[in-house]
Length: 145
Image (cartoon, rainbow, N blue to C red; front, top):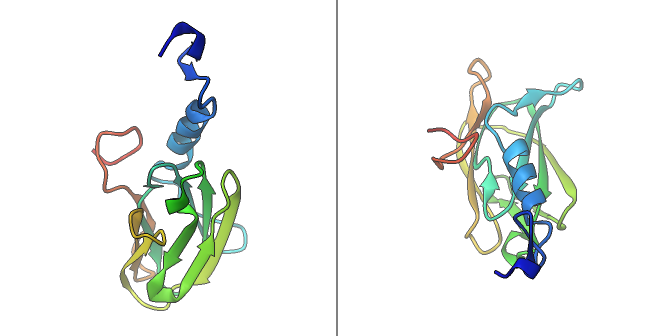
């Protein structure tokens, strides 16, 4: 890439790339599960080349609120599908979208894009166990080593 196309490491062809990467790292770290003032288990998931984090751990029987932020325009990431729960939701680019539901059973449940390329797992544990988020990827900041 020539000097005219690059300015302080930001590509002119994609000036938002650095912003998406920084937000993805900040919002997609482990430990972002929290209980909101209304009792919902809240998790932020950033979509940029994959789901970050891609493994969510929540407690059975408690309401869940997953806040998706899609930082790309790739057609693959236009929808998120939780087929085990009969849920699917469009994800417009560069906007937060909230999906709320109550988990009625324990287990590991896949969530994907419509094409099945982007994949994550929702792990539902009995309410006595600790909820949180994990990542199955390694070597990235904020991911499990």
